[in-house]
Image (tube, rainbow, N blue to C red; front, side):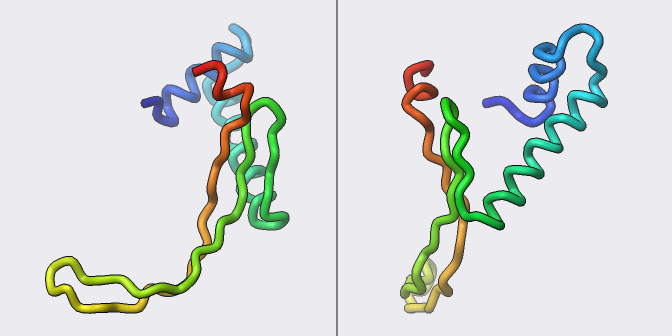
Length: 92
């Protein structure tokens, strides 16, 4: 599993020897921020050859408290789902 710091190092290496860690961090933050804003605005961000980020809606439902078994209502919610492209899947 790669974390943000490891991803930052990979971005810096890909940018070349002249790139600072700060520049790589700024580039990574800019991309993540742009994806977040676009998903919020449009509901879907498709990156050809990588994958698609999209808003998924979950309906309200009834759940159970695991300790007591008591039924409880769970509110409707939204989350972001990622679907990998075929090209990305082939690299695995």
